[in-house]
Amino acid sequence: MQSATGATDNGAGCITALEASGYLKTLGIRPKGPSAFALWGGEEQGLIGSFHYVKNHFGDPSTM
Image 1 (cartoon, rainbow, N blue to C red):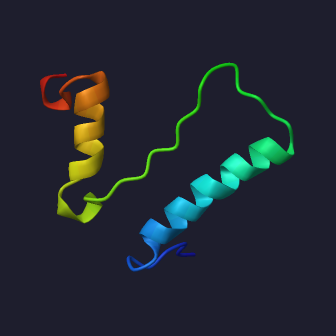
Image 2 (tube, helix red, strand yellow; image 1 turned 120 degrees about the vertical axis):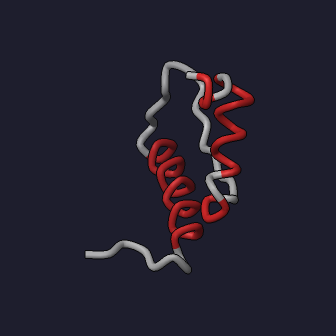
């Protein structure tokens, strides 16, 4: 079963993150620390968005 067609994968990921945050709030689940939902583009262009997020927050993955 295919969950997305390339035309809908960005939208599906965004709505999944939004729905997950809504479920946590509705159920009264409070994480022990801060939570972040990251949404970015550039997946089809060599993971540009995710690569720069990791590089800026955790270090350059190409040197790890």
